[in-house]
Image (cartoon, rainbow, N blue to C red):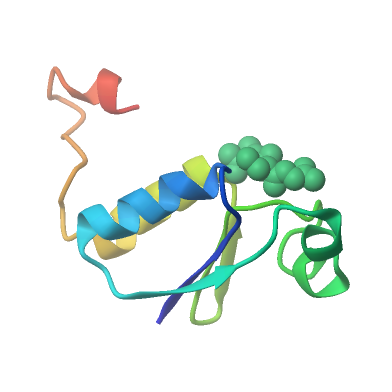
Length: 94
Ligand SMILES: N[C@@H](CCC(=O)N[C@@H](CS)C(=O)NCC(=O)O)C(=O)O
């Protein structure tokens, strides 16, 4: 099961949007946007700088919203949303 570590009004919203757009089942870890939560040892084990978003996918833990978008599209979108490199839409996608 995919698990998104999320805090309100943050870049984690990008990943929430993508998970919904792809119709993927996921679990949400709702964190406060506060150093108490983000800089905790528990969260720093996921992201060394204690930031969101972070995505868990089984044994994989990945951070950086752009990387997470690419990861989800490559492994979980079944070809959806990403135009082919030869498409005129590809630069806009990037
Ligand atoms: N380049 C990173 C930026 C991550 C980032 O800066 N996240 C902010 C929220 S939008 C954060 O966690 N800030 C808390 C902090 O830096 O202490 C990404 O796109 O994921």
